[in-house]
Length: 280
Image (spheres, helix red, strand yellow):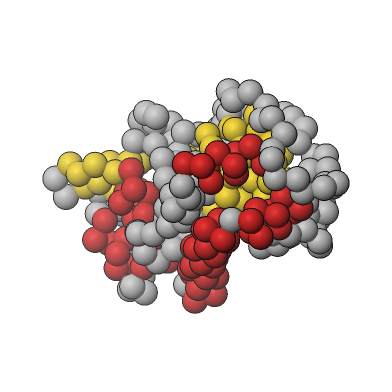
């Protein structure tokens, strides 16, 4: 059974658009419900990914803000609204790429699955972000998977629709460029962490990041009133649940963290910062 730290913690279908993209390939057939093994943890209020910095997680979330009201309406009319339940796949690694998805409500976990079946979480994305890149205009296959972790609503934009929107709305093309830049910064940050930091440094950084995003100060301590399982932590830092369990137990014995059913308490965040700096 998965161990966890327990804490506090529709739109109608759109009408056909005035933009006529012509025949469109169907969106991925894998939008089928998967049986979740547990209720997803209420973890993320902002986007989250592995990074050395506690800032920039929501870069790109407002990438459509430069659109005029009329352009935003055309965009929504050009897409297809999809509602998903927790555990439902938005797209799957290896399936043909047919477009992108704009998250309007809820949160989506994006992850890569290795040949052994082991998964690494690339990011948790929240409303305002789009998922389904790096390809935008079709062709090839998805390099990773996206799965709803709570009730979600996304706007599906097919490759043909994207091409037509870019041709007819230069403002939208600029929006996409800015969003792709934000995605590039995200995955660069994750690659730097995985390639240059030890796993214990990544764990310490993730705990500090969770404290920055969701914590509240209690004297010298930081209290994170969120629930996150050892499996979820392991998938973010690129390790195993067993190792995460062992290290959290060690941190507790050393008085660095305190874990109970209500929260994760960073009792010595300065010690975690020392670990991040390589002073382990």
